[in-house]
Image 1 (cartoon, rainbow, N blue to C red):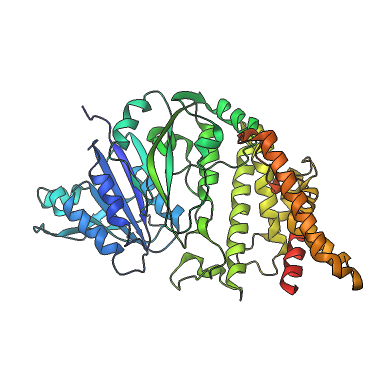
Image 2 (image 1 turned 30 degrees about the horizontal axis):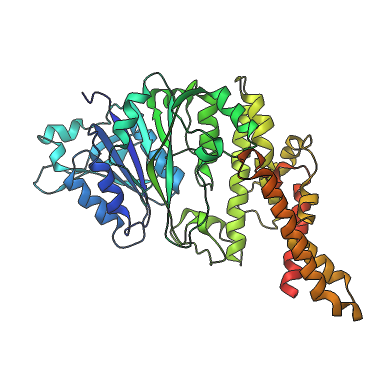
Length: 458
């Protein structure tokens, strides 16, 4: 018996190449009791919206929200808010016609600037149903990015394991469009390889034991929807790494978490995705929600500002949580907050601040003052630092020996690396601590910046 209803939320933005594969993996799930929400977040390509409408006519379980571009967080929040009953819909379509879409508008509350809500004619028996149409009651909620896809038994495997837990966390596999990288999932780094139920305390202790200072969660599992409503957690709008804030607080506020180390999700890394960004120009579309920060003449500077201000907003939300009386507030403050604050403090280096967040940098320094030193020493061990130091030191006739010295540096550098690998192997516990963990991270960033300038001159 499929008695539990699962709400599926799929944000859509310029994914015409991948959307059908994604939606096929949803409508063909072996577990059928789904309420599927598609949120078109102002797509500017030719076909994303039309493909979404095509699938509405195929499957009456689908509801489509077409909205102004607001970013991934905004699109996901539409699903949460709709299932929470925060939207009141009024039918724009007055009569039901075969093979047609029924249109609704939002009354009153419309913070995400939703243009139109679409539903298949198949979902309604008569015109009275149009007037009475409202949100469905769901038991669980799950997110899926529209360029990714599920295994067809994903939901069926999750449902029975949701009994008595707040969150189910499953694993995923990578699908590379461009050059393959050696990325690992969080499940790998946490070292879970068997099904088990853990508490939020056990999750945080494992993160501390393994030196894991970042955690993210959005589409990596299923959430009890009553629990999500009770904790009043949503995604921070307009930020990068929104799943870091959402994931840490979701797990910290959970009582029981089901760890399910099976790969039910395929995570596609596209050539132009943020995760795969190299030195390609970062272009902001005129209709993008990011246009308000596009005040820098350099596109990489705009991207850097976006990332830095995102960490600032995440830091401010973490601080709110750490000021609460929750049992894990102090642990989150000590473990997750310092690295986020250090990333956010880079904001002080920007001359322009269109989001007016720079004023908060003075409030963050207190959260890193007890961190150890070590970032500068780490940078000085970088191979490029050693080489540039040698180049800068050798003057005049000494430059004749420079090639030989660089060869020696290379030999000793790789010898040290081999010694390290032989000592530690692939043990995750010996994964290097990120530079932003250290108190002197800002000084290390300045050294790296100067190194890049020297390399450019060379």
